[in-house]
Amino acid sequence: MKICGITNPGDAIMAKEAGADMIGVIAFSQSPRCVDPGMIREIFDAAPSLTRCCVAHEPSAEELKAICALAPDVIQVSCTAKVPDACTARVFRSIRPGDSLPDDADALVVDASRGSGWLYDAAYAVSVVRSARVPVFLAGGLTPENVRKAVREVQPFGVDVATGVEYAPGKKDRKKVRTFVERVKGVRL
Image (cartoon, rainbow, N blue to C red; front, side, top):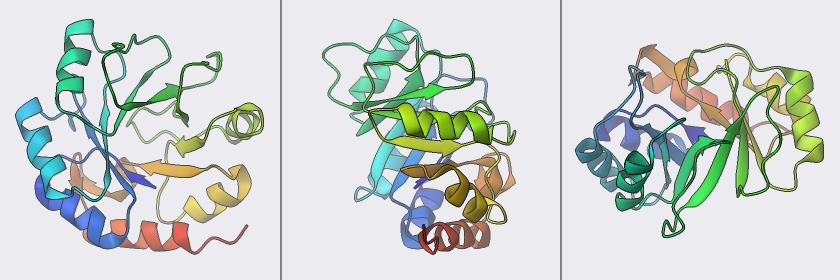
């Protein structure tokens, strides 16, 4: 499970302590959760045992090079972003209804929300899980209150949350993060 929209080292450490598997840091975006590259390195260094993901939905070629230079474990981009061949990170492709399933992804993130908190489309997410040949993460409107139902309904490989565990944009709520992680790990399929 990924706690996304991390904006500071303290929240990265909190996500680790709560039991998250991955943190996501947003770069080159208009999002209030966007972090400059210098801070991204500090955030990644704060929780080196977690999988470190850099998220940029529509980065330019130059921005992608800058992201790759940060040496994340994973880069999460849209279906159309061209990841440089020299980049060693795994590539997660964000998809939403209407997108074709890409054949160059290490995983898919079903995310029509893109950090807005809009609830996922369950029928679409289930169809992606059933047809994808790579792991599928579910994102979009997930909260501690609805994540159990979402996991049971969609049966994704993992979940990705940002706004659902915040008290303000880019500021994670310790209790919400902990509760979210506990509820995900407590789901029995």
